Length: 629
Image (cartoon, rainbow, N blue to C red; front, side, top):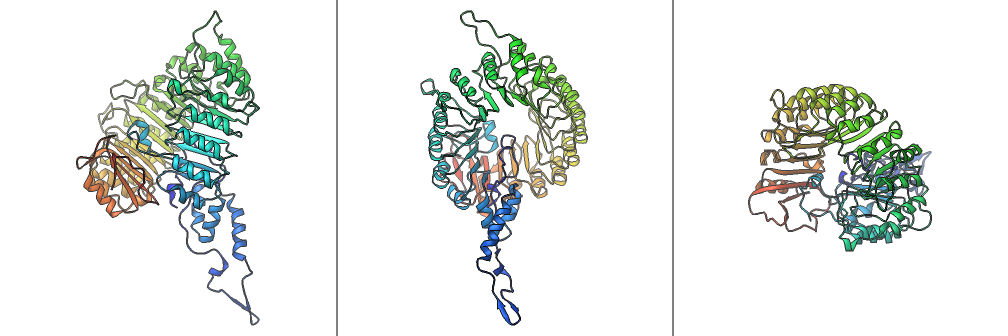
């Protein structure tokens, strides 16, 4: 099995999904028993010594005990390639199965090889689905997987799905089929609603984790089910409950009672229908929380003369929550309540304000108290001034994400090159950055490359097409070139702005560890794509949109596509003829071409290309608007 079932890197949402084993492996050859030696028999004093009976089985048993301590997926892949004996032993000891593309392998093949897995991590649609570039109904259904697992894995304990279509029936089948099931995480999934959640809550009696992250969960009013009330009425095993993305109100009385009878609860993230007053009640019930998602963080209209929540009352709840290290939520923020979180700021290692529409003046008092912060997500309304405050205070910062409040080309962003420079000077331990802005300079990016040389992830998204250095008017080639030259550990890179072929030559020459590359509105010609495909030997995932790359650039990667997980090209200059040539020359790749939903391919121009490895050939659930070449 190839690395399609293994994956190359973990996103922030699945880092905790590595208990010791994971992924899948490649094919093995040879034999691991003593009979593989050319000296099958040994002569001692004229007598022929035969190998002891069952020696090969004994060696495999010993090997299995050793492999149980091998945690890294790539290490396990390497072990499975040694010989057939190691191949079999590795498969028997794999407890977590990671599949980076649900169409790279069939459920029967994956479950048939790894018969002892207790956990499954499964990814579906390409990442550009997050930007509405993958048509609705494209695929990635969980149904065939859960049906196969119900028969093959009665002992299954954990499932993590990302960008999959999951129905209520799927969740009900999962809940009925696995008596020991305890951990469900759904990330950027769709297709399910509160009836499916109710089945999980009611039937999974040993449930410890139910995390719903960035999913599309929205029922019609007549379909809404009180799923919170379906949890057992006795003490629960819940350790993590996250439902920020559930768009309908929940039964708060049932939620408060559930929190009260969940003594092991450490992570709780509620949705925007939970008011700040209700949040305080939950915090009183669970002072042991380490991760808290606050919901709306504002009051609801006062009814029947009830008094509004006083800031001091809310602050007292945070004072009592001495274990809090991660704070998120803030879907709607009443600024007068922000001082209530001051008591926990010093202990925070993660602060997510990516939904909080707040100004620098409102956030600075919070930021200046977060001396131990390692992860910080925020909207660009924080401004350069807010980023300067973070740079001054957060000396241990490892990850920064600055999201746009309004992600349009003509919007005005409050952050710029000045904020980037400030962060690079004050947070030199930074390892990952995602930065949306409207204005940037080469000098600022060069400064970051020199100050933050431990960067592993650098994603700079200059909103607007072909925007140059806003001071010199030059292309942004030298800035991104400096990043790949000076940041030797870089594995993920996203480029944007006015870029020429030169920057791709830099990437090919210096970005030898880059595994994921995202390109938007960049490049002069097919030479850009050729540089990358010939020079970045470890490249696994390549995402391109709105760039002038055509058939010549596509064909320049023929030698490398078998080593990649996927190639996605959107709104480039590809033709159907060029895509067919790739499919003919690489028959073990799946080449999908399609346009928008319900739009037939009526010309030679290709709107979207998705090319990926598969051990089982083309999928059998192709919608009408997708053509597999």
